[in-house]
Image (cartoon, rainbow over all chains, first blue to last red; front, side, top):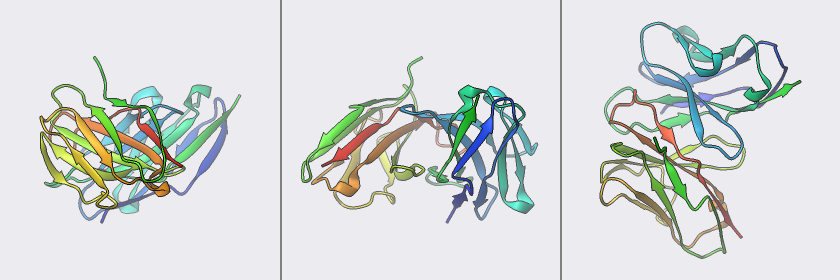
Length: 115
Length: 115
């Protein structure tokens, strides 16, 4: 069964500082990997996704993530955090084979930004 | 264009009552998913539709949970004899096709509180 671990429950960074949110996954084949952001009272918004090819993927709002197969990781990064980035971030893994395509999410990392 | 919409946004039910939660997916989207998000947790998969066919209901926690999508568009998640442990945000997502590589677009969710 697939699973996702986000080891950091809550991270606080200063505005303008760099950010890295960790994600480790467990899946038997090449996974589809996603990062979503959820602001209070809002639905989940896709930041970026990885399916194949270049292991460094670029997303919206200046975010990027790197797929490292050897470490089963897909960490999210941003070079300079803005106050509006404060939200909860979820890493998810999806099935790459035939069948139901549900996502398995981690428990999320809440990001707080200090002005 | 319009995104995924859900209604009601908030629902308070007394223990033992039946509730029905509605999801309007993006027009033309073949795949539809329901997820349950408990407080402080990531979303967890409940069920998956491909058009009107319910192909996976492995995530439904009990036989009190029932979902349908009779015409392949609008979907309803019904919970019978609600219990306090059913309190959560119920998220609906739709996807253009049946590939796991496609982005799932999420609605804002319905927050269910069972008293």
